Image (cartoon, rainbow, N blue to C red):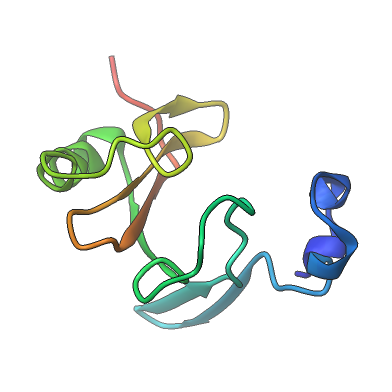
Length: 113
């Protein structure tokens, strides 16, 4: 799916509309998701920040333990850090670790309880 084919296209300059916002390859137990670099213009592309590692789990609790370990030394920049939380579609969070690598966390189920 290209950025120009989404409702978000007006939030980005036209030169980014041809970039891939989401791609997925799935075969059995292998599931690879990818995106072109969409960071804000204030973030300079550098090795490590032009891709994200996408961690998918079933529940908030499953991902929270991993998120918390990586968050201990993560950058706390509001542009790159979002505490894992429950949203209408499930759980979501993101961070940039101590080495500058971006991580995205997604679970379909919200926190139980």
